[in-house]
Amino acid sequence: MTSFDHNVAEAVLFLRMEPTWVVVDDIRQFVETFCANACPEAEREEALALATHELIQNAIANAATPDIELKLELDRATGRVSVSVSNHARADQIEVLRSRLARNRSHASPLAGYVAAMRVDPESRGGIGLARIRFEAGLELELEVSGQKITVHAVGPLAAPDPETLVA
Image (cartoon, rainbow, N blue to C red; front, side):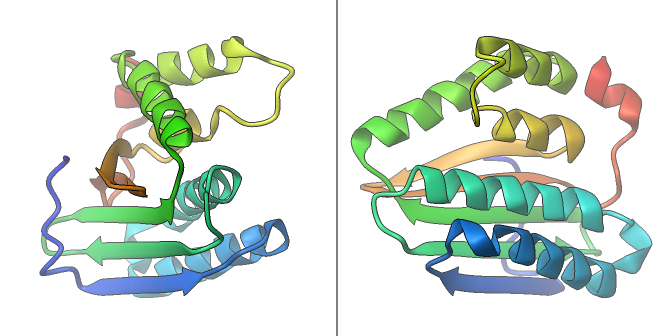
């Protein structure tokens, strides 16, 4: 997994919830406000809110139970950020997630991964959220599986990455 020291984060937001589709946008707005206040100089609130929004949507759509946990860690000292969403999933849901992550990571360029995800089925709803996180938020994705509990981590720099690195 990408390096992030979970013991030294300066600002941590932790939510345990049973969200419905109705509150996904509210969670996004809450995270954006939290990030803007916790680390205003980073100017990453929109990207981190996007990553959270996509991870929460993914968890709701692919959860075996309604319980979801969100953990957001901002660390000025290391210049790193981590957005993690955990839920319980069935084995088939875990395999679909693994496949999507592997397909996305197979592209060296986050933009190429995003375009490839859109081409899989342009008419379908869903399936591109993880690629959006990697490209639009500039965060790398990792999957942690412990039995039926899964956690998707979106980890990267606290400062916005150079846009050139996302398309190269």
